[in-house]
Length: 183
Image (cartoon, rainbow, N blue to C red; front, side):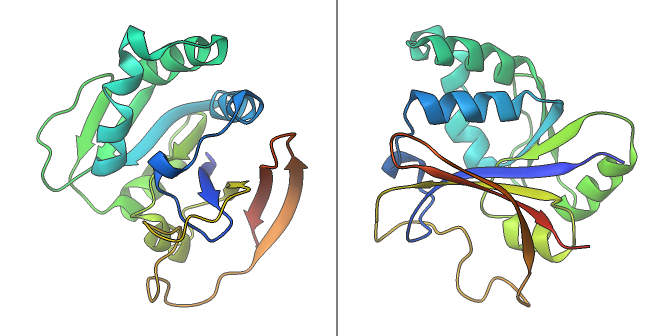
């Protein structure tokens, strides 16, 4: 069975707005390795997909060595985007209009590598339905105070207990927390 992993940058206070957080090269390199360690499918919601693409597909957005490694890999990798409004997508992306949890549970049963989920909006639903196997939370040493949060008030039906697998502190003050669902 394929594993579904979730990874995201967030502030100490749980904010996940992409524009508020700036991981340094060491964090980005770790994330890059994580994304390409057996992952062969990425799942996004519409908003995250539209933030990521065409940004990473454009050569002028590849300044550092790590960006030059990351961008072509993520652009070429197979992706699905869950959306009720998008009709088509580019960059090896298939648009899916069905229930994200049901679709990902089906995909977990198919042969292949890991599935990376990179979106906030579907996280509560995917956690509640047992879709996510592992979470990598990259916590930045900053308090943002506003914007979207990892889990909004009332979006989880019940508390979920996770098991700490590993933690890693980076020179910048970021700390990565790797959790697995309890079985």
